[in-house]
Amino acid sequence: MGDSKAIERAYEAARRRYAELGVDTENAIKRLAATPISLHCWQGDDVGGFEKPEDALSGGGIMATGAYPGKARTADELRADLEKALSLIPGKHRLNLHAMYAETGGRIERNELTADHFAAWIDWAKANGLGMDFNGTFFAHPKAETGFTLSSADEPTRKFWVEHGIVCRRIGAAMGKKLGTPCVINMWIPDGYKDIPADRKGPRERLKKSLDEMFAEKIDSRYLLDAVESKLFGIGSESYVVGSHEFYLGYAIQNNTLLCLDTGHFHPTETVADKISSVLTFLDEILLHVSRGVRWDSDHVVILSDELRSLAEELVRGGYLERTHIGLDFFDASINRVAAWVIGTRCMIKALLAALLEPSQKLREAEAAGDFTSRLAMLEELKTMPLGAVWDYYCLKQNVSTGLDWLAEVKEYENKVTNLR
Ligand code: RNT
Ligand code: ZN
Image 1 (tube, rainbow, N blue to C red):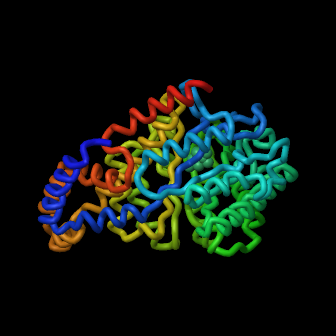
Image 2 (image 1 turned 30 degrees about the horizontal axis):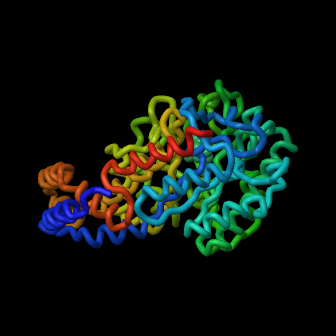
């Protein structure tokens, strides 16, 4: 732990500077502590899952690259790694699990999964005070090899994936019920074409039909919240993705589901920050998959970029924190996987803190008065305000490592645990 006296002194100076702008740092910290982030289990094993090895990530338009040693090979290892990561992240958070992380003790088809196959995960979440979110796994499976799942023209294949969605929703509801907090279940499918399609319409009509069948069973929103995730393109689906943004935006509005916006799933000059106030004019709630697109890859580890900061600013400025479920979605196999979680999640939380420390009242006043000079000047000045001092203090108060101290703990864990795998 860093020098706590020095951290407290620096915080006191920072608190005063923010107070001069009319910003209450204590209030910001309180709100930050009440904002959970859903940690995606799949960073820990390169989106592998624990079915049979030949199902491990192949196809599906996503790919983890890198060969850093020590990835989790079993659910117990993955849980241990998550515990390590969570111990280095301030605040109370959630676990986001994929269906392929079932512990079946033998071959169980994806359309036959039940909550029993996730009992160990649920018990673990309960013991660690974590809510759970869940995802159907519509990739890395022989029945996804044609590149089409819910939109497949092959009726048995389409049905199989509808059934998978149905059982996953029941599993998610069981998680929500057991843990006393609604489980957000997200459905992302890889369906699409590498090259120019002759029929864009057919697959989309079939996808709508499949979603209708999947969502037919009404489930209490105290237990389960449904989300659908769009994408622009994937590896091998460069020319056409069935579940595009327009498709799912329309579906979500018409059917009152959540829309999942993945920050890596749009054209590079589009920003999700700008979409939030539009979609939340028509939808009750959204799910975010916070990620970082780089060239063709949509899943680099989240950093404190301008893009991330403006995303957090939108959530705070619009009063959208309560209507937004913040999930992460990145996977990097070229660096320590526990560190990847810690870096990405801490950055997400830092971005939220920065946004909560904005003098929003003053900024709005300048804007409303047409004083765009002051607006720009203030926004720029804010960038060098002592955010780091408030962040360190927050970590100290939450009893987690301050500064870069967490890295030594990850290195120790690497030597004692992951390097021995
Ligand atoms: C893929 C989607 C999807 C996945 C996870 C594993 O492009 O972003 O959310 O990353 O479900
Ligand atoms: Zn995603």
